[in-house]
Length: 221
Image (cartoon, rainbow, N blue to C red; front, side, top):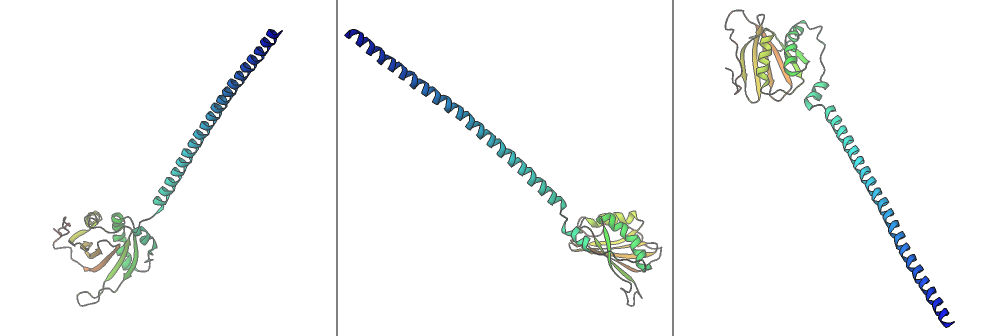
């Protein structure tokens, strides 16, 4: 009887130990599985967040780049802004001024990309050498550079004019040209946007008709 009780007690204890071990093992397994599951979900969330952040940054960068490019392309140079503000005068009633404008404006447009007649004086020269004369002022679209003088001379010749005198220094340039027995004086400041044309009188068809060009040092050759 005593042995039976002892065997029974041992069996109960063994069952408890085995059951407890299984419970602990299953608990650990469940904990590991739960940990792995949450670990995978956490990593997936981090990846999604990283992708979302990268996408947002890329989108923002593209947007900023596009806006910057639009702003840059939409901006005009100060020379163009100054040109846009200038008024192109109506000279339909001024026959003498219109003759000058018809000859000079196409040449200046070709040289500087745009020209507006902003002022004129039909009695600019009133002294003993010339009884009268006309001075016309133009605003050109680009800032005038030292290299523009040679381009201007080329365009004047292409328009049928003869360049008789040309001189230039670091600050200004002056050209004397003739067309149809009329002499024109063209002057401007380097770095400016104004070009002045004066009709300084009639000239005979005979005489020196040699063309001159501005050299690299800005001195007529």
